[in-house]
Length: 164
Image (cartoon, rainbow, N blue to C red):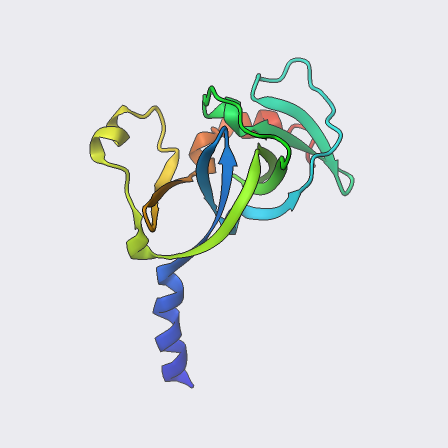
């Protein structure tokens, strides 16, 4: 039995599950480890003084959760189709936030070799390290977002003021 555990352990570490979704017609991904659940659109309570990318808050089982529009936060100009809009509830920097996306696409399991770092010239020009890596799925390249750097500590604190 000990040999079997050792044999499976490296394989598990070599794979990551990625939730692929669309924002402004762009395919993006999140490591499933930060995803708590996916919701259909809900009633939003506006917060008048919040940054423009915070749509407001939703109530989730008695808790107010900040709702972040990823299109605005990532400065994506084009709007996508919103008929399948979803809220991805994630744990980020020990806070719970909701991310609005245009639609969910798929769940994929990738080996470590299928995830590459962004090209060095791109990484040097980016304001943050907002991408964990680039997933190769056939001919597609899907950026995997790093929510902890996309949402700065200050923003996650401001967005979760109503959380206990």
